[in-house]
Amino acid sequence: MEFCETTIDLWSYLEKENRPLVIYGTGDGADKIMDELTRRSLERLISGVFASPGFVREGRFFRNFKVESFEEVSTRLSDFIVLVAFGSPLPDVLSYVYSIEEKHELYAPDVPVCGGEVFDMDFVTRNKDRLEKVYERLADDESRKCFRNLVDYKLSGCIEYLRNCEVTPDEADSLLGPFAENGSFIDLGAYRGDTLLRFTKTFPQFSSATAVEPERHSFKKLTECADSLNIPVTCVNALISDECGTAMITNSRGRGTRAAKTNTGREIAKVTVDSLEDGKNASFIKFDVEGSEIAAIEGAGNTIRNNKPQLKIACYHKSEDLFAIPEKVFEIRDDYRIYMRHTPCIPGWDVDYYFL
Image 1 (cartoon, rainbow, N blue to C red):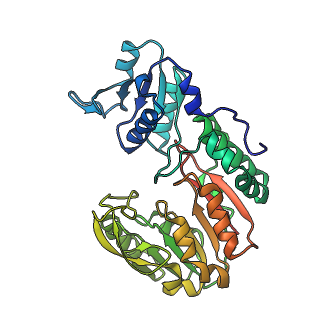
Image 2 (tube, one colour; image 1 turned 135 degrees about the horizontal axis):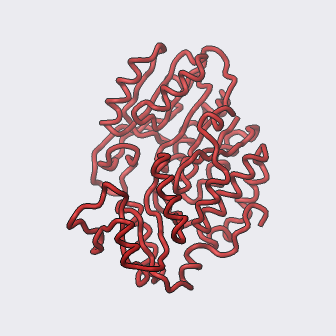
Image 3 (tube, rainbow, N blue to C red; image 1 turned 180 degrees about the vertical axis):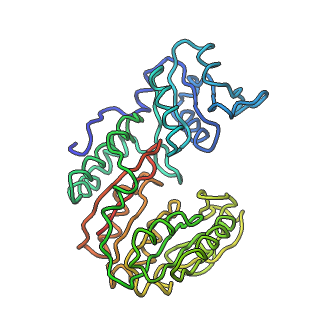
């Protein structure tokens, strides 16, 4: 396949292994990886769990495994494979992971942030044509390089592929613009205002902004950030969707907040981009909405169709995002140029499509 070189995925590779597996991390990612290993009858290989320095405490257990330090695991086991089970863009954390990789075979398995199918060789084979169509539409060599490395990473779990296509956030966002004067910026998944602050500072042409964030604690910080800016900002505490109404969301705090699969959680308003006041003159929309990107794009159909705003869309929450997101945008307008960029992070998060 033109868009990747990997011929065997990580899970198939591990099926042929007898060496012990050690999980690095104790959160949601560790649960997902251990569940996938169990689903594939590989739980017999799991031989320990360790945490970063400062997170190892006496008497702490995770899924019946004592949480050890890397040094303790290295003393107890001579030859083992490390599976990184958390995400971070922080330079000191990445450096620590790379230092472990120098001592032991290490992988960062790709498990979907928001559930659904695992990106394995079977998934790629079934969706080969859709992946190829997106790859062929990418507008520059850097995007094609990023796409190839990302697919190879997702299949193999090898973090070297991620390093091969990293760019800085400034380099990635240099794709954007120029923007017309008096346009508006719509920030979907605004968190505490980090991207609101970043983009309004980088592009002073914006005359207004709308920031949508469902998590109430982050929303409070967002409003404080918005008050510090010199343009009017409308902050909306709601879930972005393909229709207006109400929905239940998880009780997660921070970036993990998303629509709940059950009636647990709390009720919140649902809004669409097309229903927002700034949708009428939007010149840039950022989508990072915890796996609801497709619904958010559908709810922005009129805005995209009429205004053709530049779009930055996160494409790492679900396995199908790599092809489903471009398909959805091109279904609305087929005249965008599409780019892909990845900024430093393990695992393969912080990957975005840019539609210009």
